[in-house]
Length: 546
Image (cartoon, rainbow, N blue to C red):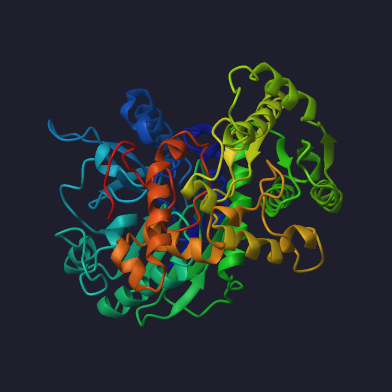
């Protein structure tokens, strides 16, 4: 039995293009004499469709799209993820489902049993869980069809399973001799190698059956799906793995499961680099933009953002804007110009000195007797944000904000200033990882000016200002932030890791106090295990210190 793993990049709600792509992959697989082609979770609708699922016309549109797909399935069989209606008189209105299609007919439908509600997931909000589990007979095999989370609950693999039942165990008990899992599993650095593969290998060995895992690829809003669709044989050996961060059609013969050539393994920083490039490209194209603008300061964050944008969209679709004030150093301006020249983008210089002085004059009476402080500093950031947004409005460009995760965590950013924009590309990238990305981007020659990497980071909103005037060194800050935000450790646990108690308490206080800023931030691309936004829902008004 030859199985094709169709790793595709869908757009949420674009039924016409999603159907066209699915049919294209079906035809490609048929040309290779494939018996069964398998598509990702919710392949028809795209993932995640969110509150579109509450719209009856959306659900009906997805069912009509599935009918079109079924009509093209001849000379091959297919498993396609879609949204099915719940035919019972109680419960949620829809199921997360997989259709088994043969000879232009939907011969069986499997429903998702386990509905995640942690991190970025909220499936209990929409879906009714499966009421029954059954297998499918095909070419002498008994197929156990499962959907994403259904494979993530083995009690031997997980220290604390989240659900009482294990759908895979149920499928095995019903005679399944091949497990097929269709997924839309988002990327996080290290997730595939450290968790997914280990889990699939463990289950294959435990049940002594092959596991076929098909994952979505591409970016949808803040999520990036890395693909890496995988086949594990009944002995727990990795037989084949599809490409990471690109569409792929991988064919495997289950009866003769010879080990195929494996794609090049990616380091963590390579994976993050690819995720950001794909996430940006899909965000821009799926939101119908063509060009982006980036405010260039000469610092490492804006330089990395611009370089990633060029790799993702091409130099002709990226515009750099330099907005120096009287506090901008000559070196920073030179670094910004050099970066623009290195990546080959158009850049414009719009000084803000006169605008800033006008603001100061206008507010002179209101600010009388008060020293120059954060109010004047933030005025400069807001002037720059207004200029970028004006250009966005005039020309239809998408503004990329350039703040990193470390800054967003502690509020070292300005609402309606440097936070203004449509996408916060590196907002889930800690500052220390920004430096790693810069060095990776420069792996074959200088693109990010070395001075932008070497010089102490500064917002340059007043004379002799440096980030470390009010923040600890970034390696310390990022260590504390990872422990608190991503690993959910308490103050005492973080202190026991060797961090200074006073610094720990100050940083956690800043994180908690600045939730209101993050609630108003542009969406970012999730690359770590816990990103700000939909994956971390914290109250703004509270008085809790862990």
